[in-house]
Length: 375
Image (cartoon, rainbow, N blue to C red):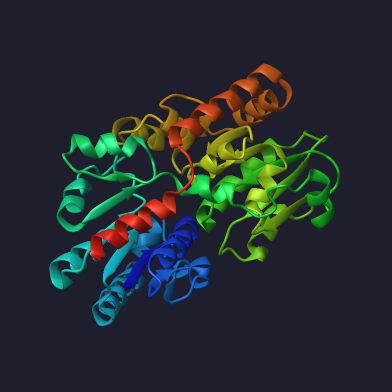
């Protein structure tokens, strides 16, 4: 069978590469073509467009790059039409992928699968109507999404969460702290990890105040997890003269050896919890007061971090919009590092979150649904 994937960011590249691996196990004749990234390319097939050329976030960058986005859409539609796959698999990235879903379903009549639901439960709930029209099967990775879609009379599948699989199958799983610091030429002080986002805009907003917040923690060393697809010298302007390191392609290794982490919202908050690292969720927004008003009055979600959303209550502190201050972040980090019961309570709640998510096998379950549907 021929499969076409459309992925627009780094986390999608990772999750989809594992889905491709599972599809190859079920379909020995699987052929792939895709908009995606390097991890997907490593599984074989043809990379048509890299997600680095598609990752525009926020109204300003989208407007400025409108022509590029339109050209990418035209290329994607034409390429799918020429390739004539047996299935099109869309991964998150709704602004782009819903247009592709409509085109594929109405013009080509090819089965459309959506792996990793967009966060329509947070905002743009009206998009559910488009899913019902143009998507044959929605494969969700968050358990509460099943009830959300049920409310809209739309049957979806919860296949498990791919981050559980990826954490479980990670390299260097049994690495010791000593081995890690020797391999990366670090000191023997305990580590605080800094995960400032996956896009340049996020990093530029979040990293400078994160660095301010960790000042004064002299007994610790700080390691920045470099984002996939971001060139190393981008970080240079932020860390000039500071005693810290940026390590690329080692996010899980860094977290596994860290005493605590400062993390922007997104998949990273979930990964940090799965690796049992106490965290402070911090996400700086432009126009903080207006951003908070929008969160309270426009978005339909009580939290921004996946950890809290999965558990349905506050497990980790979220400092965003008007609550994003260096003082708040520093105070919470101090609690997590030095107050034993406070730290233990967060770790106990992580254990509950893992139970809710369930075990491994998300990619295998998703692959089974796709293959059975088109066979």
